[in-house]
Image (tube, helix red, strand yellow):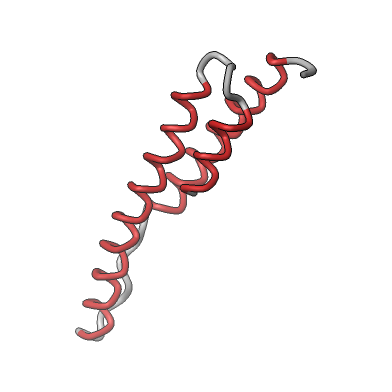
Length: 83
């Protein structure tokens, strides 16, 4: 997701809100990687103790964030009009 955030900043350089949107994508990448490590650690511990894998809310959160940021990005792109 890091290249996506940087690409977004280059795609919409002069559009209002593009910096915030690009930084939000970068922040989502950091949060996802941190949460993924935590999920991996919990799953690894459960397997070692022969217990069921713990549930994760991360896929739902990431799907919502990607859909929301994608919609906002599309609206900014449409609002920018032809170059």
